[in-house]
Image (tube, rainbow, N blue to C red):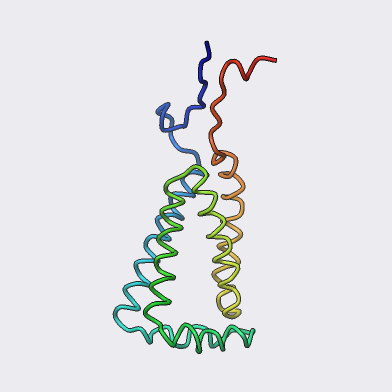
Length: 154
């Protein structure tokens, strides 16, 4: 006979979420909102993003933005907006999916810095807040492992 032992989540035990979970939920909601804002902006005027990469210190970024993204801004910016929404959903979902969401959020902010030093004014403080939140939340997001009583015996 074997029994399965599962760890209980705070929601299952009726406990309140900790600060790391709250931070994950706030960032997840922020990404849902920013995805919606970017979608709304590109629907209203696809050319609103024309100068987005002009301050980049990497010439390849400027050329790629102008030649690739702005060649079809609606498709590319809607893709970006969908990506932001997906990151938000992953963070709100929790568990291993949230690890993917956190990784995407960190990568997003690091890549945003390629668009110029002005973006550093947002990205650096954001990363200074996000990285400790990720480190605090990461262990709780591990895939739950169900162990049987037979596995637990030496």
